[in-house]
Each structure stands twice: as C-alpha cells, then as structure tokens.
Image 1: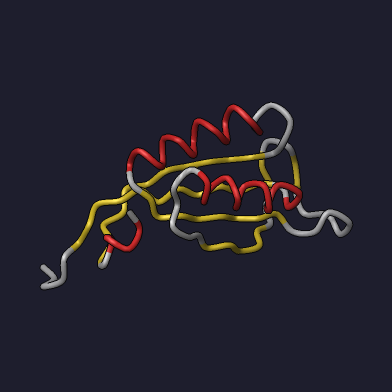
Image 2: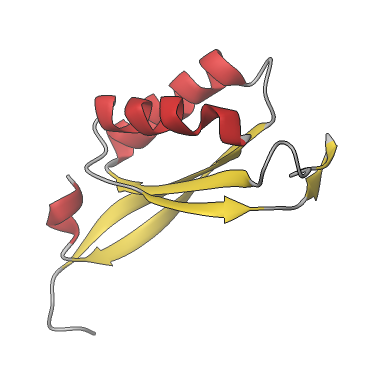
Amino acid sequence: MSRHSVVPLKLVTIVTERILEDRLLRTLLDLGAKGYTLTQATGKGSRGVRASEWEGPDTKIEALVSHDVAEKIVDHVADAFFEHYAVIVYVQDAAVVRGEKYI
C-alpha cells in the first residue's frame, strides 16, 4: 500500500452537447466542485451519432468531489437537462492521493 494518504472521493463524469459546456462548468463550481477536467468527445448513443461538423464535438466533464457534492451534481443535471438535451452522467468511486485538495 502507498505511504501517501488516500481519500475516498467520487468521480462524476458528464458527457453532453457542447452548447451546455459553460452552464455545466459554472454549475459544478457553484455546487461545490473545486475544479474539473474538460475534454472533447465523440461517439454514438441512443440519440444517434453525435458531433456533427456544425455542432462541434461533445463535451466530457470530469470532477473529483465528495459524496454529497456528487449527489447535488447528479440531481441538478438530471432535473435541469435530461428532458431536453443529450446528457449522460455517471459516478464512480475513486481513491485519490492528495484527495483533500478536492473537498
């Protein structure tokens, strides 16, 4: 086992239409995330192939957060965006070295 302390956190991942990027990034920070990782994403799902040339690539947002913040993020995204946008959210357990930076 590592000699460094490991903190149990949640990795929240949101994959969505690019148009929601700014709103979701503000929301994450407002709900308690200390930061995020943002990458471009392409793929195919229940709504068909995404990322046409005029829309640009989709957005994948990842944030390491506490259990409580993860629940707030999931609830908000589901309530505010699921009905009208292509959005997927998933949460994974993460054991993070220097995890105190994220809570």
